Picture 1 (cartoon, helix red, strand yellow):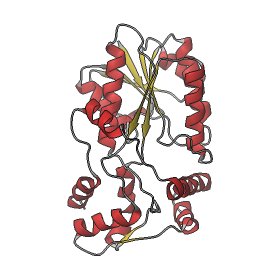
Picture 2 (cartoon, one colour):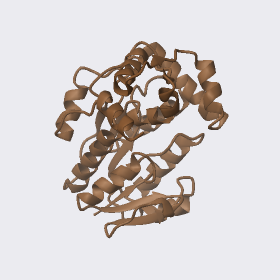
Picture 3 (cartoon, one colour):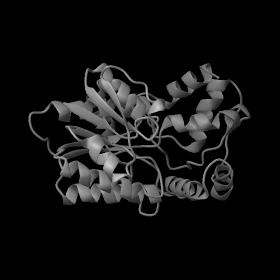
Length: 287
């Protein structure tokens, strides 16, 4: 039995590969550059690209279970839909798809791509688990210099975001992959929200950093144009604007879990959810 992990060099995918290997699973790790992979006797690196049909056919051959994670990109929907179709062609009926929380927000480009993929999964009655992660706590590591200067710069607004630790995300993915891999037959469609234990506003996150760093940290505010300009110096313009639209949605709607989301995830993981405060304290200790 073999599990193919796409996006295997990223923040979540790399942890999923490691977690599966530690559980004794046979893993095929897909990457454009396999030199970035940490391999072991149970991890087979596979060079491939989700827009390269020939390489994906080869990667999917002999696979029983698929973890479909693809990064934010202009052709994200194309990558995912091609891979799903090739998985069906290869007879793979055990799938875990990595979507996004609040997937129904219509105007965030990478949310809309994932919503389309979810609709195809449902229309084709694919027996898949759809994971819907909230905003990653670890994204805030990029703000280290700003935080040291006394500003929390992420414009998440005042409604609230239930940020989640990527370690909890990866653990949930490993659990679902193994559940499907080890089942004697394809399991029913399922959806799991991946969230943190607290729903925090920008001001509340800044207060956590103030107490953690022992100095005043203020919330940088909701100026999305200024934030897009800052991002534009670090990434392509289309991506910076995509993230601007995403944070606009955070400010309007928040990213607030349903009543049972946290209990469901804790039951799956078997331990309490990691908190933002604990994440901040761990990060600060390493700075």
